[in-house]
Image (cartoon, rainbow, N blue to C red; front, side):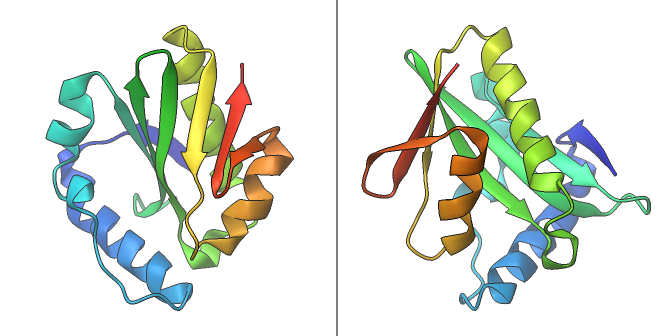
Amino acid sequence: MRITTFDPKYRDDLIFMVLEAKNALGRIPSINDDLLNIQACYLENGDMFWLALDENDRVIGCIGTRIENDFMWLKRLYVKADFKRQGIGSRLLKVAEQFAVERQVKTIKVHLGTDYLESHSFYPKHAYIEYAPLYMQKQL
């Protein structure tokens, strides 16, 4: 497994992976508008988006960041169902946190959502604390 910066050649595979991940969680698969144009919604704004790729160069995970003022939002952390609990989410999170350090961001925030119950236990394992219902943050 390797982590790389988003490349448009992976767009369709990313979308398929996210839809599959949502389906595995019992959600009606839908795609968020920002995932349809990562270049404009993330990269052109100075934000970032990474992909986790398997040995066959297929997308198995992703994470994005959005910097606002003096903090950074984590966006769209997904791991393909068959690859969960193998440390991929943790590795993606570490890459995003390193990006925050490089940008001299001191606080990272994440909205957990009501449907993503795994995130409610994942982020506290990485030193994120709740600061409002369904919101967590980490001080760097």
